[in-house]
Length: 251
Image (cartoon, rainbow, N blue to C red; front, top):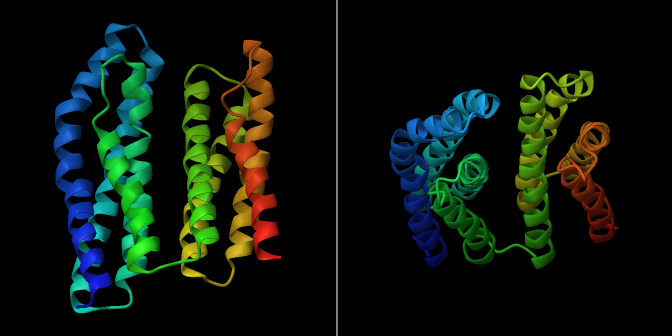
């Protein structure tokens, strides 16, 4: 096992533990507390939302942890598939650990514990491209931006669900699935970008257009309802800039 594989194996072991055992411990201990906090402050819609969303997030992190564990074995054996498996594991754990931070913080419960899992996985994502399987700096930089777009599109999907629970209009119902789809494609595009796969351009542009079309109408609708800048805007704005950056980098 060479030096790069040793680094990959080490971070894969840690990533596997974080995505499985640590995530499970945090979920079992914090999930009931968070639901109770939402109910106590009279946020019935938020309580309903996190009741279903947080288990999904935990299972996404579980899947990422399992992929990390498999990649550890691959690095140990010097297998070429270890690096892609590690990438998939980090991308899943990044989403699964980041989103729970938002409802936890808004509930006033203090420091969100899953931020630690997120921070380590983000660091590992960088190390994978920096030390384990070096990629050009522009690819690393762009993959971090598409990763941001990946999370923002998912947030728009969940926020749309919240508006639907609150009795929101048809725009949210129509575009909620599209935002989730955009998030999935962003995740795949990020991995494809790092691996240098063919079809990356189509995935990047497809995800960006889905995020723009899925985000702009609900951003306008919510802004008209609330009379202040909508939090739905970041996803389509970042998607627009990704199109520009990707076009400049690849042309």
